[in-house]
Image (cartoon, rainbow, N blue to C red; front, side):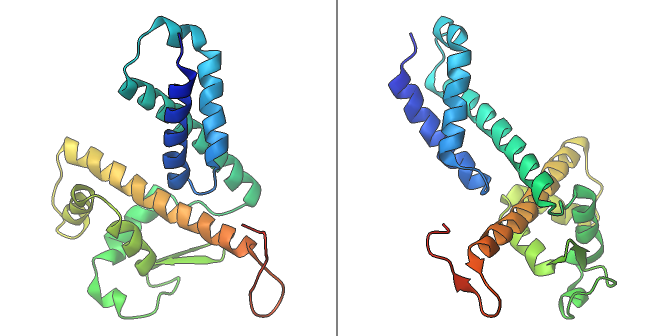
Length: 197
């Protein structure tokens, strides 16, 4: 028998966590998606005695899949530019570890920024995303692009995941800026619109 009280508690916890990772999604919508999943798969959940950790993992998979669909829908309808992993790799390769490029303002032609959709993602934005990485992820990027080491297969997989994390962080930053801009209205100085939150 499904313990709906416990499942709802776990769903709320997972939904809050995933909503913080995908800032354009709503925790309540994610919670409802998780509980809908449980209702649709009730026979499976009743037949198996999942430990709490497995239930949480199942719920997280449902939540991340839902948030990913919502992100794709948001990006499609907002026409926001999506930064790609190859562009992020190029920034690390050509500019991030080059101190001389940090001393001049970014331009489209000098290789230390990517311009798209009217937004310049410059080295300091990349630095913020890089700084949010786990130390092992930051280290593998530095080994590949700063020290130019040859990486083994395991390190190449870690590098790919680290680049994807940086790319997601940059794209989430674009969305957060877009959301913040939506909270302001009018020409001239920005004015806060009450109730827009």
